[in-house]
Image (cartoon, rainbow, N blue to C red):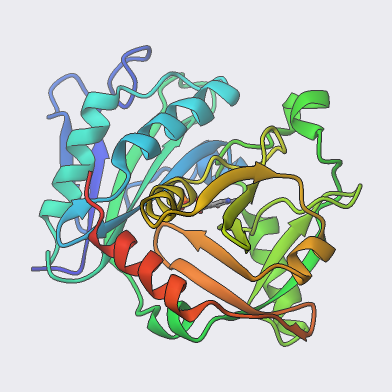
Length: 296
Ligand code: PLP
């Protein structure tokens, strides 16, 4: 079986016309074949949304949460609402077309389509994922970087789309190059007024004593699906969970810090802005075992 597969949706939203009246709802393509118009707004303007869903042994993880967030991102961008039932089928079909043994991921994309055409483009791309054992066990070095917006940007300036998972990730990639220049692996964004936000593709989770905390609410950051699963795991271990408004100093004196996300899972932060910070190896192993075992 191939290690990747691409499914194109004929009608990603019931609020817009289908692309071809005689085509099936889903079509499987070789991912290397040219399926996207060069005029698609995903390519020309990054105007669309996506989700990356972890897959373990053929099962998409935290699927309902990802679909909720996908719908919410579409709402924030005023895109035609995704037809969740057809997206569910597209996710299943793309996973079914690849090797079920490997750890994998499905990326689903809904773009505004070709300019002026009024039909969104949608696809699901399933592929095997890299081996993240080293990051999950040994940890990552992280620097904090100013995101340039205040912590309340979601409320004051909703047109900036903070908290939506848009396709415009050039900044989220450029900060990784900045991190590499500092000998670090990843980044934690900080608001211009000094509050910890999120990673460019992850949520910040930290431990203070018997509490597991994450930044929120309404900080213009993504509602993390992995963070939600981690809170369930922590609660099952008898730990308290909650939202907070930490500064980088709070992270520096925490008992442990993680960057958590659907594919890499829980990566402990072992160095923050050049200073070593404690790694809770036992809890990290428990969290990752839980995340690998969770199936919805
Ligand atoms: N924050 C941002 C900006 C992200 O891009 C991601 C995931 O890619 C996350 C947080 C973590 O979300 P999840 O745990 O659902 O993968």
